[in-house]
Length: 139
Image (tube, rainbow, N blue to C red; front, side):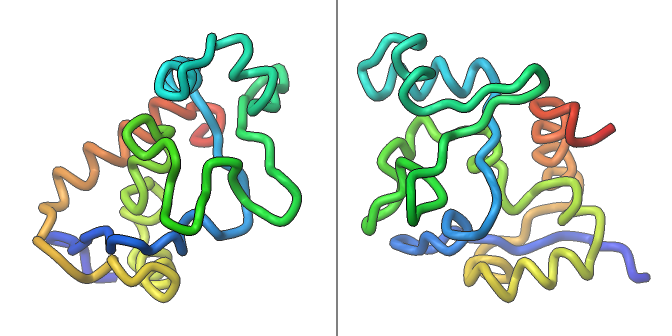
């Protein structure tokens, strides 16, 4: 398989297709603190209202009929404080390291393949942020 030399991506204003895919939004402790601060809540209150926690992970609770409690028609209600998983998309290890997976994601995301060229080294650095944030997912 031909190696990537670079990838193109530019998030499209008003697009929420990545936010509306099946799955969960996983959180780091810092994600919880940032989102709580952004919403003006104490971290414990934010967690009680929005976070589902197991011994090995935290994720946003899914409201009925939505993938994320902060997904609104106009976009992410906590965009400046969005979780690492959201911030690093589409530069996740499983997409950056696999051309077929990247191309599949491009069918869902109109920003993939558009915009400035992102050097593969920079894309891998962003992917590494994802890997460090969620080590249980990347063992």
